Length: 210
Picture 1 (tube, rainbow, N blue to C red):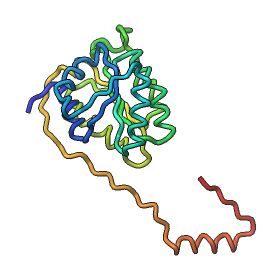
Picture 2 (picture 1 turned 90 degrees about the vertical axis):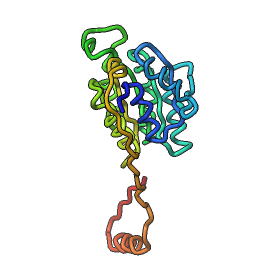
Picture 3 (picture 1 turned 45 degrees about the vertical axis):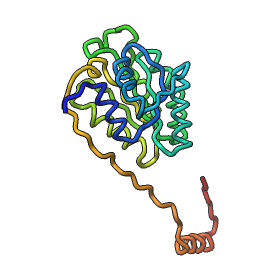
Picture 4 (picture 1 turned 180 degrees about the horizontal axis):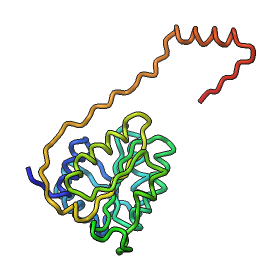
């Protein structure tokens, strides 16, 4: 079915089982907020007083529930206010998806109002980040973001969406989320016996733990 970009964002969140979003609205992300309001019976939006609080709240939500935390912010200062919370999630290996909206594609790189390269700014503190400039890539990018956030060593992923993409239309097909199987950390007795023998046979054993 044909949906606009904002509708696709919300449908993808529902695909991933997201029922809570933390954020603070602003100019470029209003299309997504307008659509999220229509689904308030399925997705609860927690309005914070500052975007930094949204990132930290999403971090805490992920820690306490085991789910991927989700936060949203507008372009420019809204996006940069998420940085400390994203960095915290990165250092502590917490699965988090931060969704920001940027100026329209035609305004990128032109010192547009509240334009900032949030993808470049968060590169050192995210597992991965994306900027979506084409509606065709929106759904798959959001799915990748959630998969990356919760697989391997968990961590934050940022998805920056240009404002024109939130209004553009494209065919959307629902998909089941990728199931992530946790790697067992069970240690067999045989493994312990091997380590004990290695320590016994070594002359100057050195053990690094943690």
